[in-house]
Length: 415
Image (tube, rainbow, N blue to C red; front, side, top):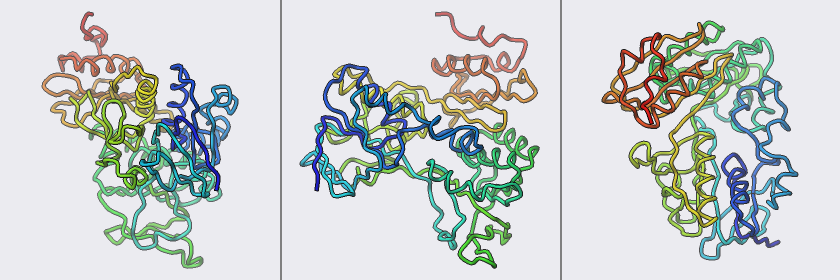
């Protein structure tokens, strides 16, 4: 059994972990830093997996967040294919799956999340896929062929993004969604209708308001999926299935170590856990959001991971700066680029502004006359203005927002 030591050890080598290590060095941290990743790859961009990488437009090397040389130059020791079995806070050490032990002075948990599985009959069949890693895309590709029948369980962003690539690649695509509309958990009805129409026009079929009851075996190959049985009894023929029904935060290590857990690893505005020597960042955390008056949330987004990495690095560099991000997100489907800012939950008015282009879409969400969120498709000017208005929760006139003759920039309060 081998032993390792580092002043700062990071569990998880994705956006949050890589960004934290880099920010730590940029802030002048000179002690040893170790980055542990479960995958055999250097940290890489995950959003393109369901888009350009699946489409074959981007290579694995092009996904890398930073080169091997960059980590070496920054004196960040990277440990690929390294799985942590247990955190032992009392000894400030990690037990690794290979039997080694890793000692730390400060620990950063950046374990992210994993795709939620469906615990229904047939879940063990071959031909069921998820979308979270390079390995997931590699497993999907052999069956991702023109004419193949793809059923996607889940009408969220991942499901829609894969559907866009699949139908353009010649696959027969059908989405099954339990909710009555796509993007029901993350978007308003107006944006849902916009995206459903765009996908239907491209040839994607939908079954909305119905759950998945089981995965049916292929009669000629019983170990492989051959269909998806919906709750209404309908069986959809399938050569392959993508399960895209949400993300489960990887909190088990933190939970077993005795850290406080809510809807994620509980951290404060400085990404500090209930253990003074352990911080946590990224998709696996539940944290106070100043934008919502300190309400605790768990956000699944690259901007959030990057912001928490900045915060945690500032803490360990001795100049702590609290979390202060206004949430924003993006999605690429076909030639439609969605940019969203704020959180629309709790709005009492929606203003849909006529877009400047036929494929554009702009919706503003208000509460008590103040802008709290915006969804903008192929509308970068509107998005940039909305970021200002949402950040400042500006009181705006709904009629002016809806009038394309009104210059949106005129609604930004003078400094």
